Length: 388
Image 1: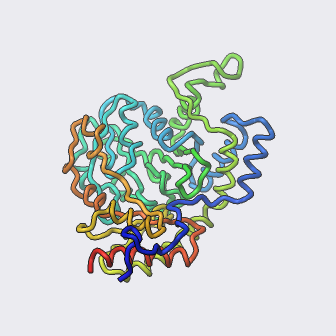
Image 2: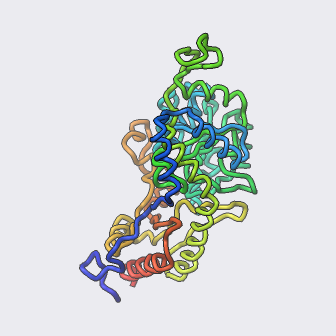
Image 3: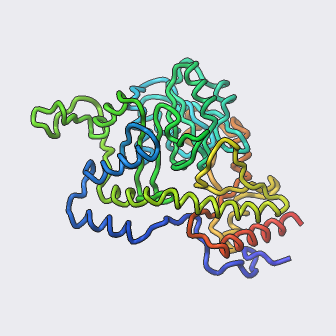
């Protein structure tokens, strides 16, 4: 048995494989430089509009709005749906955004547990916790695998609530042949530096609802309406709003990235298939589960380890071997802020089980077969040291 690097042995790799890596080329560099040289760098310009048009066409939606982050898109969603009370239902195994944003519009987060195999919100748990005070459901397409949207939309219709997809991780993913983000009232995306397409920081709100689109256009510009302005310009405030408009520099990068999206997702899928085939042969490792009715963009590649092994130690052991692994979400109910709202450890057993067992591995287009083989070797080396 090989001695683990964390215990002083030789690592599998001397040069670490990063956990995430954007797929940039000279196209993005030139596009950003051209905008900078033009000096027209503020938000709401022609390049931002072009990106919105192309994104809407790609997703098959009527309207798209380029904003500063997916968090901003979620905030904007609650503002244009006029939510200012009640609660917003979202999964406990979740990034902070969907849980925090309700508090910014005088609503409360209402948490529900997830399914173990997908990490996505469980429709049965939604039914258990939804109340007459619920205003919206925000499902998260974890790792790029779409939630059970038919069932979620059915529950929403029965309870007269909105569905706002947090599709931050799911650009290009599909559910029953339809793009994620275009499966409900509103979809929200992220173009953060860790995502499949990247502009550094950025996001988008998309919708087919004309009324929501009209509101979004004004709300993201601090409530200003150019159309009804006596000057035909700014300073004519007609409603509440926020500054969510995104820079033309980042729009230029996002536009080039969108052109590469299908290639990026294809390469990620090929790497994931190869890695799954290798890792599935290792005792004690559970590879990702993918439903039959979805097309996944493989934003995250996550394995499960035996519950007898500490996940933080396993992550650190892989890092010592030169693999940029990580654990993922701490369930919201285990965080101090949500505990101040009445939640406590033990409230969501499936979320907490996932947290104890899930290990995120590197996944991006530029990984080579050698990289994937080294990742497999490192996982096998670490788990064998604990199991045998």
